[in-house]
Amino acid sequence: MTDALSHSIRDTEHLDLLLSDPPDYVVEAMRSVEGDVLVLGVGGKMGPTLALMAKRASVRARVNRRVIGVARFSEPSARRALDDAGIETLRGDLLNEREIEQLPDASNVVFMAGRKFGSTGLESLTWAMNTHVPALVARRFRNSRIAVFSTGNVYGLSAVGRGGSKETDLPRPVGEYAMSCLGRERIFEYFSGRYDTRIAILRLNYAIEMRYGVVADLARRVAANEPIDLTMGYFNAIWQGDANAMALASLKHASSPPLVINIAGPEELSVRAVSTTLGGLLGRPVSFTGNESADALLSNGERGWSLFGRPRVAIGQSVEWTADWTRRGGTTLEKPTHFESRDGSF
Image 1 (tube, rainbow, N blue to C red):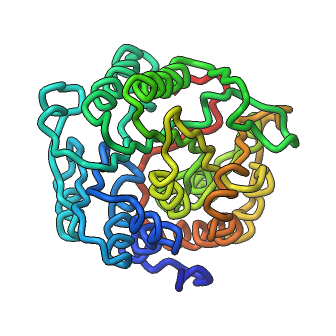
Image 2 (image 1 turned 45 degrees about the vertical axis):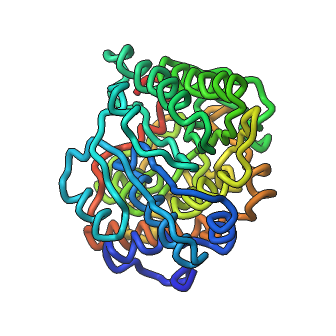
């Protein structure tokens, strides 16, 4: 990663290049797995750079394959950018069974579709997206390898200082969003057993980059002189490029029954400490409200690191990049994470 020690990310083009830069283990994975790659839900926060990483890794591996992205594409510019990068795009509604049946065959599927924000008050739609759509996809692509994005929210809160929830821990989801995400996992697990489909379930907690994520949320609040709520006092974070890489490489390890992998950074990060660091970098005083609770949404990423190695971008580098980006007025996705929610309401 040639720019990993850079002190500044120039613009969104530079950022997307970093987020889609494939490490060697992804190049090897794209060489090992045969067939095309289909990304369902490519229009989300991570989808574009993940699809681009799959394309770049395949080129480096000298493998000629289609990388196809499916989404509603409410923003035409997002679709054009993918097309320009060599990603084939298809507009589709994954709630429509007929449209799923008409999707092209692909040996490798990355399932990124889902619903989180706005769940409160529209719970039925959240359940439909997070459980009904997986059933349609799992049946349609039962002969493919499938990497399924899930969330660390399925674990519920765990005690601070104990390393975070492990894949072997019993899920205890709080709130309908987290419950529906566990439902998504169970649906894929069922179809994996029924059809012997090779699946990897990826419990992400949390991906960050300059435009989105917990660190970006904190940076914007510090820059705006807004107080920082400490009630959810700790969190995990992983550079989105590293999360993309682990997700793509998981296709090589997909199995039946599904392999479950936490995708998380190695530290239990303190909201107070990260905010204080951001305040120093931004030249702003930082104020706080509330006190740190004894538990938080925390995941243990050891299983993933044993397969793929430690994240390439350290949290300190991400914090510096985010502060610099914020200070220069860099663009954001205008999608707060609401990571501070302790009751599972989104």
